[in-house]
Amino acid sequence: MRKSPPGQQRPAAPGTGGWPMRVAKAMARAGLCSRREAERWIEQGRVKVNGALLQSPARDVSEADHITIDNSPLPPAEPPRLWRYHKPKGLVTTHRDPEGRPTVFEALPAHLPRVISVGRLDVNTEGLLLLTNDGALARHLELPSTGWLRRYRVRAHGSVTPAALEALKAGSAVAGAHYGPIAATLDKTQGSNVWLTLALREGKNREVRTVLESLSLTVNRLIRISFGPFQLLDLGAGEVEPVRRRVLIEQLGPQVARELGLGPDPQEPHSKARPGRLQAKKGRR
Image (cartoon, rainbow, N blue to C red; front, side):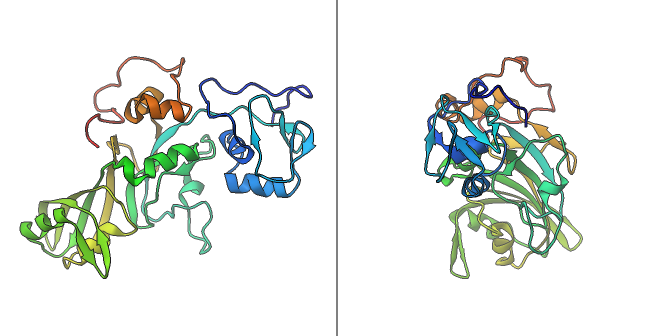
């Protein structure tokens, strides 16, 4: 961690906003750790505010406070960022897996900062996973009230009628669990398998697999191709690509962007993205 002169805190990055905030949140926003890790560091006596050892994470701080971790100044907060990641099959969406399976975060390129996922994809699901360095942005994108559409391409063993798929639009109940409306289309039949496209807004754990199993279909490949306006497109398996800040602001809307501390990036080009490399489509949520 780079050091600043004693008693002087380096200025926060422009447009990050959100002050005052809990000290653990400030540490997480600086990209050092998660909030839980920050709270553990505080309990271990590693954090000081204005020279005084912090006894509890229940402390609000502002830009005027001088925060140190292990006697090194807190780095400036990073503005919220978002990445599109093509998750391969076989990776667990967690930072640590008790079963020792390979994880998404172990497989990410070393140049990425510390990130968290927006929701999860199960170990056998592949496709678009959004990553962010900001917990507040992740929570906003995950909120049911945000209502962004998740679209999947599915290969499943078995057969199904268009009428059975049409009935999913009214929602369904499987083994006592209720699932919201799903728009499902039969794209083609390939041997003993069918290819489907599904669109849903809830994204409950194993929702696609469970609902299709109720129709006697066994999913053998599941690919998420979009999350709200953000699309997988031609991103290769294991590849990560940043979402331009102006695109993120456009999709969130100016009010939410301001609340999350998102301002224009002066280093970002204002020209439109090239055809075929669009990261998001407006109006397809």
